[in-house]
Length: 464
Image (cartoon, rainbow, N blue to C red; front, side, top):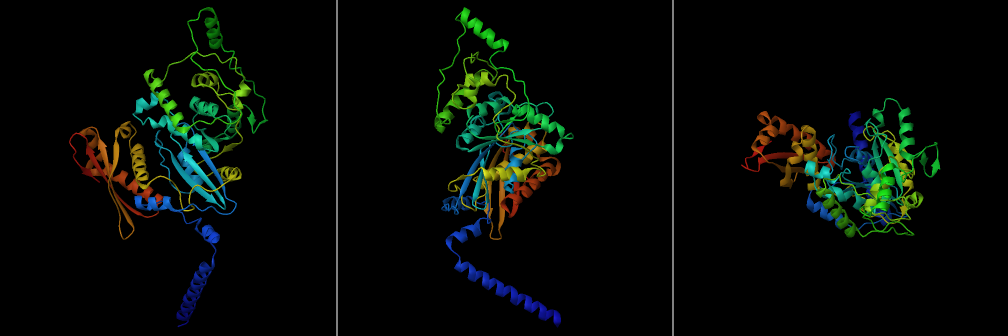
């Protein structure tokens, strides 16, 4: 009897609180409702929900601040994992294999009146790698187009690779040289795998030339880029014979940051891809840059051609213009809070570009296809996943809030179908289950996924 009375009092109390909350909601102002909705984020489950989300008017809170961060780095350095950890939501596909991300994706994180927009870019690749793996040509241009709209560059560097951790990749250095006035930070990732933490200080010194935020912290002996033997030989031959011609244009001095039209830049990059493809990506054009002042290049006072950039970074392994260096583990969260707080502090006073409910600008079909592709990359160690084509065959959100999806997996040969499906469908079934779990984490709803593996020659179906 006593238990029944206590339960009745609890229920009455809950109901009274519920009525009070309803009353308060009716009394809230427009600004207060915006703040209330800041944490009600969601990833659209259908294209219709996506359209409605994008049609919503973006209402910025008082004193709104915004920062757009381009996350760049070589393939498999942990860019997507870093974004997922920073945002607190699984919106980017992650795999231990390279080239998991094929298109630009934007992820959004709000805190208070500040909005961070992360631009997840494909790993930096060469035209030769594009042809080798049969990748999309857009991989060459997507990263640079992201820099065109970014406020800050975050260079992610994998310190667990003993062969490359002491050098910045030439493709990274190329982007930094093309956009020297764009603020940049260095993110040393996978520090959880470093047995000797002292090595992190050595790596930092080498990659930054001992200069962070404009302040010198280590004495570094740096070789001049204009005095190497190859350049001197080029100059000597050019003076004595006129057979070697440097295919460059005169450099121009500018007052502000580099401002290129995006479409024009895309055309230039595609022309570069065509040229590199013809030569297999390995051709070299001798170019004399000894007349250029390195300080002017680093300060963005000189616009370099692609050939001049290649010569400028040829002997470089580091970059002296990083504002900060962060040592993080995107996998276990080490150092993430410090990086996030720094990014919030760098935000500019300006309106938000996404509604407070938006987590990513990827449409749901893209998310599903990239997730399924990610699981195939993890399941097979060979080049097989790169030859597969994925397509949405069926999509329905049922009345019981279950997302029912069928994805077609197209193979080039019937033999691949048997390999992918496995005995009694065991392999493809495991891939489907793993994809389902990841998609549940993304859409925050129940997901039922079927994989329809077919051969392009026979069109024979093998459903999970």
